[in-house]
Figure (cartoon, rainbow, N blue to C red):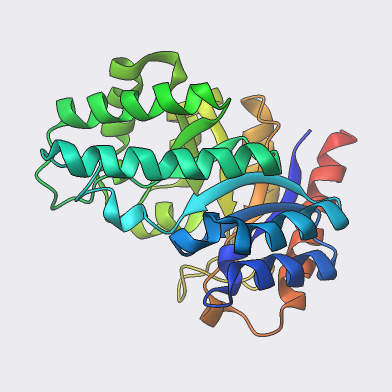
Length: 265
């Protein structure tokens, strides 16, 4: 069964532990936690996150690293020490994910201007998959408009080279910014999509609160149902895309209502 929720990234630059608390107090039960600094993996701060998650019985679906922009220079570079530094850092994420019960780790990957061949990319992605498997974590490649992952053919080659462990995050706004239909991505990647970031859009704006644009979420959920998707649809907005925090909860409820209606068909 699909579920709806919210990413704590939507409250940036609020401190992560505070963002998790705000969403919990709003009534958000399914959440992606966006870690905004390496210090937040340490007990002094992570203990506050863990306490809120446990006190409010939050289902932490996924984790998103602030270090995504570093991946080009570290993980996908030709300098082995930087590669190993980031792999060690991501072990820290995976350890916290285990504590929180999160299973999906969101990867942006190398940016378009990075001097990273496909072969190196596939090698490093496989290395990260190996480490994540030790923790029971799925590393899912997100479609990002300024990264190599904007290219649908590249995403297909990723699976061809890295095998069935290859999984994906579908991000609606990133698809729009790339000029790709989200439905085209769903058709191409099918059941390997394990996570979805949602936002509304219109001809004038590519990232809006749910219900403030013209995107057909009913059709999206129907398409996802068609590939057997049973994961989360998590609202991910930028702070300047909405006004009151309550809009995040209201959008989540709207998606939940559409899911429930679909379940009755």
